[in-house]
Image (tube, rainbow, N blue to C red; front, side, top):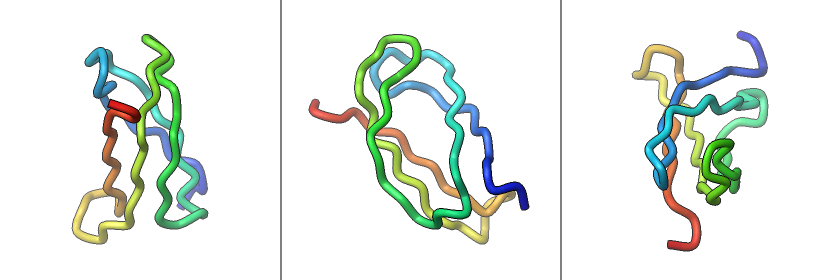
Length: 65
């Protein structure tokens, strides 16, 4: 498995399609990243999910809403 995975998601603020790069070697993680379109802060939650196709579950939420 490549340690870096690109995921196509949508910004929870502006709804724009964005690409998130995830370091899967870091395991489960939660961090804040700014949307590359509207610059609003997003809470990125990454969990390992063996039931999904690529083994990851990525959730984006508004930070500071």
